[in-house]
View 1: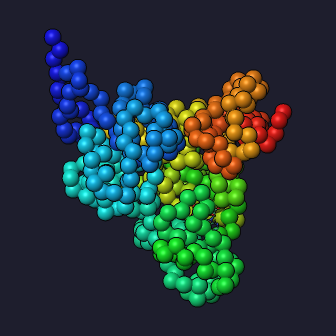
View 2 (view 1 turned 180 degrees about the vertical axis):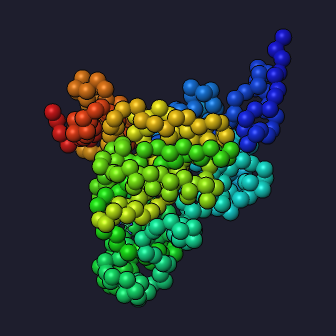
View 3 (view 1 turned 60 degrees about the vertical axis):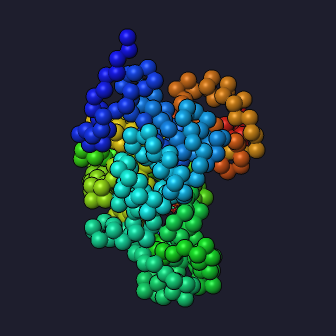
Length: 405
Ligand code: ADP
């Protein structure tokens, strides 16, 4: 005879809720509801598999990256509250692969008694760059000089208040991979950002030597772990390569960046993975560029280069499980993004890439190959940074088709 073993399981702090039995009468593992069907959702789902965690996905289409691999997929619009409400039924916790869900919808879900992680109070800072800048300034986090601007004339006033043009303009919501960011050199060139009809943030153009990311994971319990600070190399506003740890970053600056990220996570009440994108300035300071409260491209190296990946720790955090060790497995790990090129058949490149470098780790997202689109990434690791970088670069370029040997 099958008997249901119903007991409280760790979902929602320590630990709410009696779990329902599945079709066989056994108590089941928690269901994580993931809003957004991109590659971050796909890889978070992958990290939940060894733990037996079940996923339910709210995806824009049935063809999205994660929708191809998750068993329980709802196709629907995350901007519609009733769709979100229906989706949340049967989920023990809701988490995200993007920050675009309207904050008021997340508040409504919480009012319904649904565990939303990260919650709206935290997530609004990743959703809206104006809210983020205001909060970071309030808690004393170093940021570029900034303020909201109303029109091109106001941009000129903002420039005059500082060192003049160029100035960086950003729409406060909806941007990604540099879309929604403009570098403007005069008032006449400042019109475009205002066309979208959303508030525009002006920032000083920071004279940085490189971009860094400090990634941390925090649980509702208050436990937090910090990954090594990484260098993120951008090409045309898109992350191209991540080097872990950031080469030649002094211990003091590294510890400062990690502490900054841990402080932001605690102050904003973040649950899950928090990526803090940073500028390292010419005079040796770090300034926060932006925040992402979800697994992040700058953390993809952790899949093969850290003891616990960002995805596994995000799953643990949203379920309030103890977090895993974030330390690196190798001296150096390098991640290079694979962008689509002119050759749609990337699989045909596997033979060469795998034969050339048996240590190479390929992660593909199941996306159609279109020029410039992020369709996967590779991870390499080892003791010699130049060699590790070359292997990642070679594989990414070969997969894209920009080199043939
Ligand atoms: P997105 O949300 O599209 O990722 P970001 O705010 O991260 O936008 O900006 C994209 C890129 O633009 C950054 O990685 C950086 O290279 C450049 N950038 C953004 N803000 C500034 C700034 N204030 N000064 C100089 N460069 C900037």
